[in-house]
Length: 178
Image 1 (cartoon, rainbow, N blue to C red):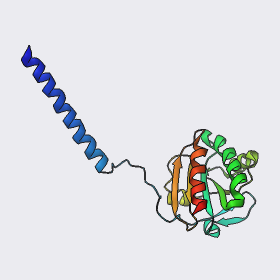
Image 2: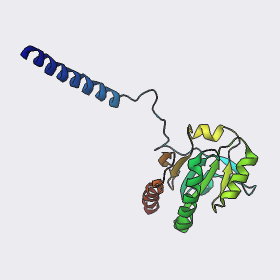
Image 3: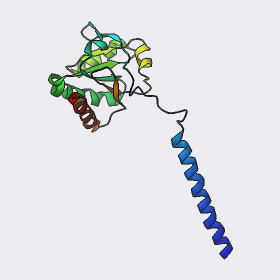
Image 4: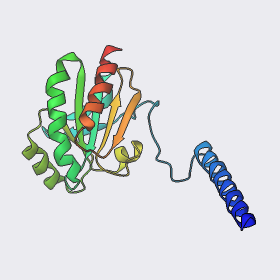
């Protein structure tokens, strides 16, 4: 009986040690499924046509903090996030923030209708090719990226849930103070 308990205790210690070794190896080596990020790198420049028919180029906003929001009308999170970003835009535009929405919908007509219906006051651009999405490593929608005044990506967030806008505001305030 005593021998069985010792074996069980030793087995538990061995399992714990094996688990610790496996976890340390997992954290030390990036996994093949790790989400790629642009944080710390220059934001890829692009020029896209807007809802107003005019082309905008990201590099035109160098010297300002830019919040890029990649969205799709079919992503339910986008329906909640766009109005939240409109509020942030209204509050921080005069402090040097530029909010730009980029639709990655394949159906340009429906995307334009959706964007017009959202009635946001910041520019909405349309990525009709996969090039910009590929440059920004987009895999899920929506994606929000903050670019500092020098053009470097400083923050990114995939998806949106209520309360994420508070994280955006913390990051925006920090970047505006720099």
